[in-house]
Length: 162
View (cartoon, rainbow, N blue to C red):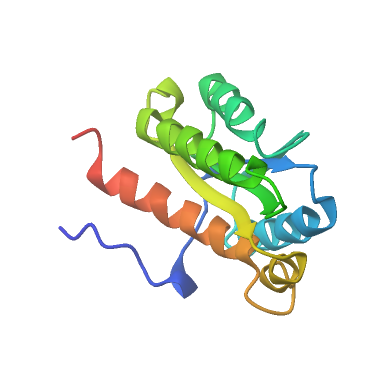
């Protein structure tokens, strides 16, 4: 039996439930990422998608962990946008958000079944770079992260509890 997932054009999210945790900071960018993610989940026929909002990138992981503990979902997608400024604040946030979401992915939120955690947080040098990656007419990273989340659910199901 192969544990390979189908090519992205064939990925189905039927019978799958997802949560999206979206930051309000850099809201115009995040809204476009959210539109891309919701479109991808809809096109792949996800059973449900619940959106949870938080103030910024730092607040995403604690919210995602609580949503995971609540259960009833197969995957969580974190959407945010960090743009480098003139201080260390950017680097600190990038590192902490990545670490915390990675830890959640490893533990699965103490969910009784495997939980996919996808990283849709843009970390860019400029606002223009972020806008390019959230372009609804191009390679919208929100939609790409949603596809990654769907694929991870398939992989986790194939691997099982082993």
